[in-house]
Length: 345
Ligand SMILES: Nc1ncnc2c1ncn2[C@@H]1O[C@H](COP(=O)(O)OP(=O)(O)OP(=O)(O)O)[C@@H](O)[C@H]1O
Image (cartoon, rainbow, N blue to C red):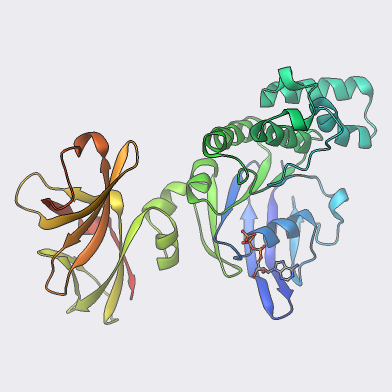
């Protein structure tokens, strides 16, 4: 376990500023997810922490010790990549033992540690198989065990689940959380998948164009995004561009939001599960344009007529409660203004 302090780190590639004055404190034993779309700088930040690239400016400290100039092999880190990068000619056991052998540990100590890790990742029965005889998920578990073998103070995970199929991915995601919680290594996970970030992290860093857009716990990021970008990135939200008149935004019908905005238009974000069906006539009439069955929930594409033209919104409702609804039906919906997040348009 170690704290990580990132102080005003920038990385420039020619004209491109891949990291733009990033500062971040990672607490000891915490798992932070670096979340953002392609090219936002999350891998660059992880690689700077690993010492695989030199920052153009700024400092990186582990437990208060400046490691900016320390080479990768001298840093107390373990890394897992999207491509499992196992040694194909070695068994699971030999792969996990490798970093310990390099460090010159005794045969008995290595065997003990490898058995411990095989139990932790649940691959005991597969210890003598080669990577080519393993599934993708098993290979990635082996890579995780190998990274953890020397008991690194910091674990760096670069899109470790991206190459796996959906079911294995969900399972390993939960396993990573369980393992990290049990050993409490300080960890950073790079991902472009919001549900992955929300599920595993203690805190999430939303990155955009080389900068930190928001740093928050998963719940507070989900409930109270502080910027329009975070709101558009987290949660399945409707983004509605609406006029502001006399300090009020008319969402639809009688549903209005009071606002201090002085811009002529507002960007209003409403999560798809916060568009609710009303049981009486109090709501707003909406026509179902399309419905997509997604298992436990069904997504409805709705059109709500308003004075400013039709408003298109998506709503996610439990499939069990909406079986009778069909495209073309008219229903009543309500949106609670307290569920809306408003930003300048
Ligand atoms: N070695 C390099 N030379 C030049 N530009 C680079 C280099 N590495 C990264 N970049 C640029 O820096 C920016 C950030 O890249 P980075 O790989 O950190 O993004 P990312 O958020 O991890 O995206 P992805 O999910 O696609 O990997 C991108 O615009 C990328 O093209």
